[in-house]
Length: 401
Image (tube, rainbow, N blue to C red; front, side, top):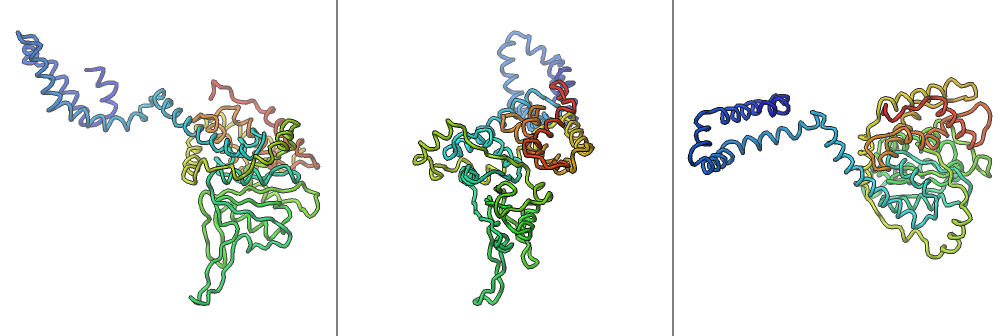
């Protein structure tokens, strides 16, 4: 009795806990109860007593205490129980995530690691910039993700003559009602595929900037929120290609990751040529829906990040701003994106806690486009600088996490 009270009931500090404690103590110390238990008909009387006490008195009190105790289990820091149930939930989330990736792979051959990174950015509620040459499947991958996620999607092909109103919408006069009504633009969707974004004019690019950052559109002084979730997957041709212009740092920083698709391997290209009539975007079916995606994105926020991981990120960001060969280091927004990507990658691995390897795995995609060297470098050189920064700061060990 004393152990029961001291370990569970007493820390709760609830009045009914004391009542239950004293009832148990009284029953075990009462001379009358001892006589009943150890009399001639002790066994029969014991059964009657237990039935009477449990049905009339103790059972309601125990049920009431259970209703009060269960919500307090987490406050008692029962880590093994808490970790077990969180692991189960994380595994369920992992199954849903990989179901989406498997649907995308029906239209995309190879590039499994690329698809995982893109899915991680989507889970992290971020926007994606695909920077590569034409013809490597940038648009196909984006449309496949839209269909596999079950999202409403629109596509806009950016050219120099595309106007901001094509993206944000405009007000149109309605003769019947004699009022202006809002005509939606391409951005009023859940997943926007912005094709060849670096061919658009700076004015059109700035219109997209507000939508990406604020999640709303302003037309004639009226704000229109975009549907949730809202994701932008933009593609761009390498700077220097015909009709392109370099995106400003402020807009590039709005993208959570920048990735390249790259050429397929010889084996992958063989399958592309052989199965081109069999693989189609029509084969991709919805493996999720907006509600499920929002739930997964919310779950990312609850992935545990130890303080040692935060300190490591801060050290890397601070170091990037002190190096003389870097003109513009990692911004606070960039560090936040790196943190969010780390949490999302951990969830993709079926865990509710992040590890040092998670940070390193997503660092290049999250930080490569946020570092602006003094001299003109290739994308590989920028990623190499990111790896140098990671190696320059001692990474936290598993024992610290």
